[in-house]
Image (tube, rainbow, N blue to C red; front, side, top):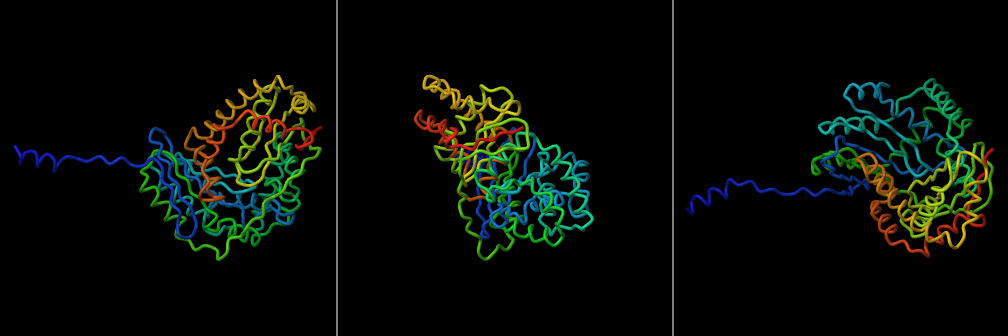
Length: 386
């Protein structure tokens, strides 16, 4: 009996549960975060690169956006086609604080995503002729830039001036771009200490982490990462070349009580205004939350100015619910999870979306009242369109 028991114990498989998440800070400062979501049908692999070393300036305004357009074509300019033949796709976007490159693949195609990003981390291959063609594409894009984005860009301009330049860029600056300028921007944009790689989906956490570290954790970093001064905002009024109008609250870091209260307040009031929108990109730096409408020129501002004391309990309940829903939406799929985590991690290895969730859950009625007040004419940016 004893020998049989020993035999059974020797052959029994021991199940060791894999941790659902793992963050790795590499020696060069890069961060790899793996979020295992076993029931999802796709893997989202997102490379986020902080703009700390390449802030938008009047002289470089839009060069990061132009670089993004050319970079994602790949070394042979056929990357989209190659990925599509494998049933995968690539997207990219340039934000004020970072650049995002995302590869979405099937459950067995993580290696393809890593290989794709490795290609994009190589020095960009381009010519002056290609740059000129791509500037033409961006000119067409700007012509159809949506009104909500134009209103929000104007709010940033009023609030932060040259420290809040819209990442889309200045077409006059882009027309002067050269291959050498884009190569310089790329080198600074992708310093290893500015990188965060987030892998979310049905993956093996250990293997995915090893692949991520091999991709970005072995590159040599810069000697002295820059210390970026905090941007300082101011309220005021600005006109925008767009339809609609809005109010933009000046807020701090993504997880501060004031920021989540302003987000809740903006969402609550916007829910009562037709054709409304609320725009906010989570940041560790000072930012704006824009609540606007794309039809009419007074509805949103009039609603903020007309809030009575008796309205506030109802708005608080609605705003808290909508803020929780907003957060849950950011954490609902591999793509949204990787995006939320990536945009925070590239700004600092210690930042997590859960910090914002905690702030939303602990939001008080008094904090919400202050959030509403941050949209007042005296404290906010008023944006007026055509």
